[in-house]
Image 1 (cartoon, each protein chain N blue to C red):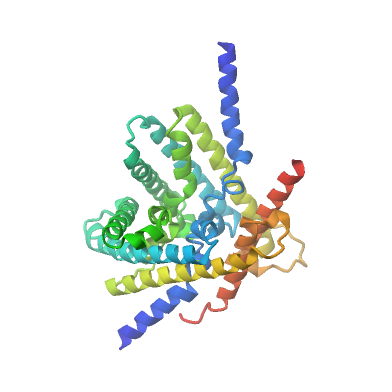
Image 2: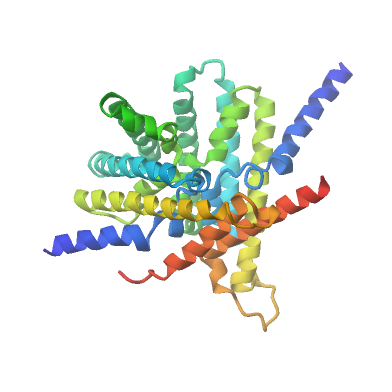
Length: 196
Length: 206
């Protein structure tokens, strides 16, 4: 029961309190780039969630069971980025073969995920926080993905409405998006300290 | 011969200036937002981060430029990423050895240079098409442009959040620190306003 409790808490904390976009600034590029429409944002979020869960688990296994055991920490970053690139490739091939319609709807987002800093960032944070069990690593990765999806969907919703708003000329586009993100980050600060 | 030399010097100057302002990675191309926002709570980490980026950018541009004839199109991105990851590892080890405190502050944002879009963008757009010298100049221009932006943003945030810059108090005693500037909110809003200001000035000039 205690383990379950800890896992649920870890999940909620990753989604809301330690949201990667609002507190760690990870994944800001796609966040600013593709959050123009809700359906695209949701597709991107789902793809990221999938890859981040997969690569979070894989890098945890490689880091703890291979690199640390043989004292190869120097090669950590190279290994991580290879794992992520491989995971993205794998997901791409799998989707194209078995779910062509889903593959079509992800489109260009899938290969772009490799350079999404949220994924590598999460793998590094898992290492930094000293997450000590595989299942916790999996839950935290999944939570991070869901948190990213939530952030990007909220932003897309706001931006759809922003198109109708009268924004000062020089703030159109990226600047107003950043300021909106700032206000959202402030809102999410309200959750800080709720757990831990 | 003189003409050719002059033309080449012109190209070099152009490449350098492009990175510094005309194609400034943060303001104009909106690349590398993640470190820009994350490490700019104070000037010192921003400067360290900038130096790391310059180092990695120059080294990876040189290597990519040297192997540009060997690259296979479908393996290109993978080669870039591996080159960058290698140099980031070197930079991380150097930081950890010589400035351990800074390395701790920056934490995972140093390895995150690997996925910094600026570096891969320069490898793709410049180094894989040009010779070594142009690539180095381009890397220095872009890197210094990036560092400059980072320092300006960090300067504004540090002064407003703590009233200090480089840990030296600069604001009058009656100044009330804005704690929010040191938090994520401050990063997003300051960068947004700065981008707006850049848009405004470039529009006025036109």
